[in-house]
Image 1 (cartoon, protein in one colour):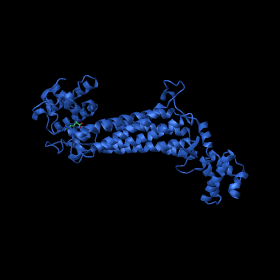
Image 2 (image 1 turned 90 degrees about the vertical axis):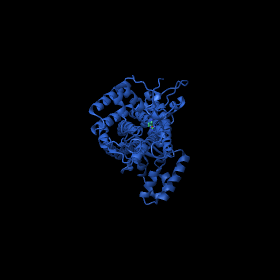
Image 3 (image 1 turned 45 degrees about the vertical axis):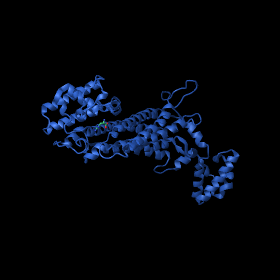
Image 4 (image 1 turned 180 degrees about the horizontal axis):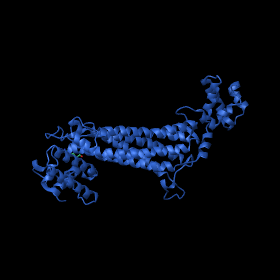
Length: 460
Ligand code: ARG
């Protein structure tokens, strides 16, 4: 590798140890910030010219040199050098090669400390916007699928035991609520990402008459960081993003767990499209739900990214420390993983094929309308605790007979509930009667699910 003088080499009397050079370099991973690094530098140079620190001619040469470098990188013609340590010094050293001494003026009034803080905020803002767009499409897809299944009855579970009948549409709307909160958190996080650190320089600010507001508006930041020490050391925004990403992945993992269960032979509630599944190298009959399994599996790494960042920050004195260089890989990993998992789900959800007959058959098992029978008794003046006991005994009897509740005769039911039970009881014991009766905001009745979908469309 060709070595040339370090941009910070003046006070050093020996060359950097070869291992230390590699150990301290970040260019292997922070090169992904080149676009945002160059955008930040262009805004900085433009501002320096507007306050008279650079001439118009110097600004123009710097800006066109930076654009040329951007092009070199885009086209794979740029030589990334480990001896130049990071993305910032790779770009700056190349600028000096390209335009000569004027290039040495770019770093006036700036430090890599406020530069990197700016770069990752710009990068993360773009990443958040891209993720927000995929989340929005996924929210739409959930509503579409829910709208097709407002009347499809399935068992609702607690403890993974059949609990009460619900509609599939209602179940999907629960997923919708989770993801909508995730998108809200992402948007909230974005507000704190979108603050400009540049101008803090190394830590204390700069002696030049900089115009931070102009830089902020050129780069689309909503505000300028108030305190220079905080500006260069703060990584809360990255932690918040990883926390949001972790929770989103926890949600996706829960959905995927359900999809894996539901697509099993035992449940058979849904069929996943072949294009989202894979086969076995030994068992010819297998169709495995790899995509949901992998999304479920990937949740762990994002939680790991969050823990890595929290631990990274916990003992750092103000202001910038080299530790901060370790923020990038976890953050990039969280961005990539979240985006890819959402992209996978956005593809998968519209293609999930429900099997209503299997769902309804499963809802018939496990006495899922037992609560309806208890509620029926309560409406006939039996106190709820007594009603619970009566139905419990009726269930035990039905189990013994190998029958469902609605297969018991009126006389058999009366044996437990006495005169409180009349012929109309059979209406509440049907699955359709059970779901239709939960007819209030947030309930599973098909009419309520339809109304909820309408409201949800306005919330997306
Ligand atoms: N590569 C460094 C990072 O990622 C850039 C800032 C370096 N600043 C310094 N004073 N060494 O954090």
